[in-house]
Image 1 (cartoon, rainbow, N blue to C red):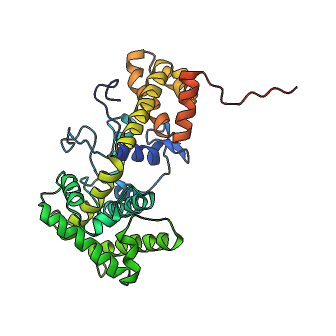
Image 2 (cartoon, helix red, strand yellow):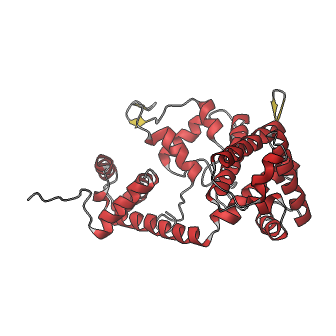
Length: 328
């Protein structure tokens, strides 16, 4: 998008907003002018859409950090129109529901990535539980991208994370033997791992909920540091692995080439009716270009991994979607 669309970006939160307010074909209705119709996506309430807005500002807003761009809505007419409806009469701001959802995301992703990493053998649980110096240094390096904690503070947070989780999961000393050696996928160890993950989730929920009040973990707090430590573990031993980075590089190339191909020949897109509508509404190609960009982006963003590989094979290798069989 950036290369083709005058610095327009792809942003996951903004794409999600676009899906639920436009792309999901659940409800079609008239606009207030009575002359046009548009898709209303899932036709959600203002309250629901405000709850989805982790970054309640437009792509062009001053709140957007050019280094780490995050925003809830693209600078695209149909999306801006819906954004203005969502916040009509109110100053856009992160709602309590959005705060809860954001924290729930952090907890869920951190704990389940950790669980997947241990199960796959990528995350060395035995080194982390024993606060191995090399492991602590690696985690600290990643944590300092978000936090000013010292290496000693990270070491203590790591120890406290496991101590509290083992206590919350009611592990006996005999039951902790599996954490002191490389993970083996026995049924019992898998049970222990799931129990540990569930205990971590419960521990974090207890830390942010006081009675019937929710308190998001503040930067610099013990809870926030433990979450950053857990997230850092996944980054160090899973996301930054050389073999995974190689695969991710290849996946990015596939997405880029699919984008280039569809943009070069939009007639390959399945959504031909929308292309015809664009040609009718914007006869001049230069005015139609930005809308075609968004159409291509929508199509690729909605692909599964398998579908993207299939489309790539058809586009660049001339493969048939069907296996040709000959009968003799």
